[in-house]
Amino acid sequence: MTQSTQIIEELDDCFMRTAGNLMKYYVDEEEQKTKLKQLRDALRDNCIESTKMKTADAIKDRLTSMMELEPERNVEDIVKEYKQAIAEIKIDPSKDIRLVQYDKQMENLDEGNKAESNKGVENTDTDLRMTSQDMNIIDPISKTRMIDPVRNAVCGHVYDRGNLVAMLQRNKQTRCPVVGCTSKDYIDLSQCRVDIVTKMYLEKNPA
Ligand SMILES: [Zn+2]
Image (tube, rainbow, N blue to C red; front, top):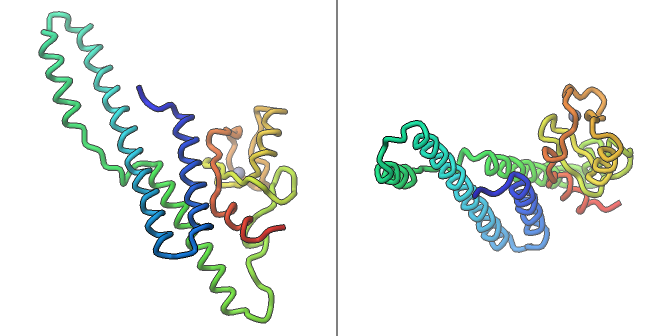
């Protein structure tokens, strides 16, 4: 019984959105840090649990097929082997792709925030805050400002979720509409996840 891929994707989106909200609503830096750490710990625990379940499933499958191939084997032996294999499961969450992706997004967010505050210091009299050229906030599908930005994990391009969904409903076999995109794959909605960096930027810089 493993979490389905879709549930995991929704969950990861949720984690990213929660991180964005924590950054937005916790003004106190220490408090924000603590909350973000709790959130990351929760994600890490979830990564460990789902990997454990996946591994246990794989062990079960292996032993089940072994029972079929070697019917002479003692069931008790197999059960023993199963228990031992389960006990020996070791998981290193630091390499979990979900956690790696989360950390990457948080890092991007942090860099974005720093770049923005540095600009504010250096250019006090001219309005040189990050513009839509620095941060792409224009949806490549509708050419309008994005509302719910999602990043395509395949090529890294960002679109507005609503427009993307509408476009894929019209034609499921659609490639990335960004000019010069090297990906030849059709867009897979499950590969498009909330882009917290763009989302936070949009919230900080209302239209
Ligand atoms: Zn692309």
